[in-house]
Image (cartoon, rainbow, N blue to C red; front, side, top):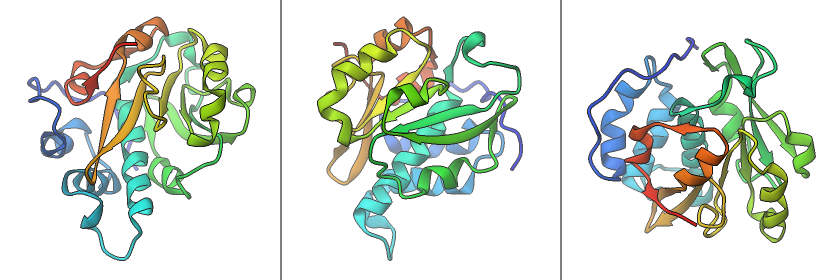
Length: 209
């Protein structure tokens, strides 16, 4: 797949609706992934839109697509990478719910000069080179310790644990009926030196601790 550059400028999106997100998707990426567009449309239509898959499988395809999309709309400090062409690592901490969907959507993709890759671990210590970490539900009991370990490092933390963003994480997913939504804690991201695009902020529900 082609190298992905920064998204072109867009007028401010309407308030947080995934219908608008789907409308903007072709413009957000220079050459958007077909898989991403399908997942975004599923987010709009709800989990019942696709045939031949369980709701859980469709849900995690959608969430994988959004993780991939978040990479496009967050800026990391230049010293977040060991070198100019070091990979961009998405870490999955705990019991992986994606069943290969995340690897499938990032395969062959790049952001700037950084190849996207996925790492799995049961301990944060094994994901310290990652720029984004998805904290799985299995780690809920260890969440304070995990967030304390990450501290103010330039890592975008994402989860589906209830109130994750309100408790110091950066982004969390939640379901509204059959649709996947997300909350953003911009204060937490700023403390980590991350800059979240206003386009993404306008599409999520803003929360504060």
